Image (cartoon, rainbow, N blue to C red; front, side, top):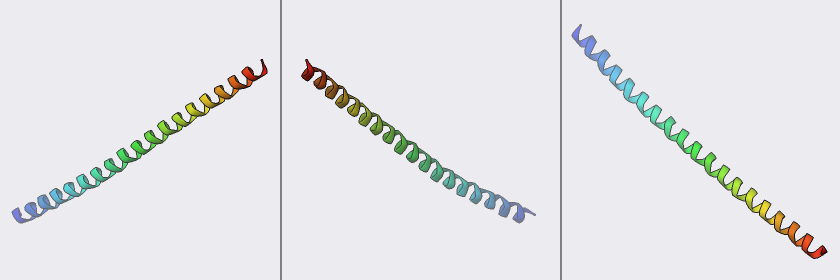
Length: 67
C-alpha cells in the first residue's frame, strides 16, 4: 500500500513538472507573440505618421506653388 502511494506521488510530481514546463513554453510563446504584434503596430503607426507628414508637405508645396 505504501509502495503504491509512493509511486502515485512520484507520478503526480512528474506530471506537475511536465505541466509546468508546458505552461512555461506556452507563456513564452504568448509573450513573444504579443511582443511581435506590439512592434508591428508601432512600425505601422510610424509609417502612417511619415506618410501623413509627406502628404501634408506635398499639399503645402502645392498650395505654395499656386500662389
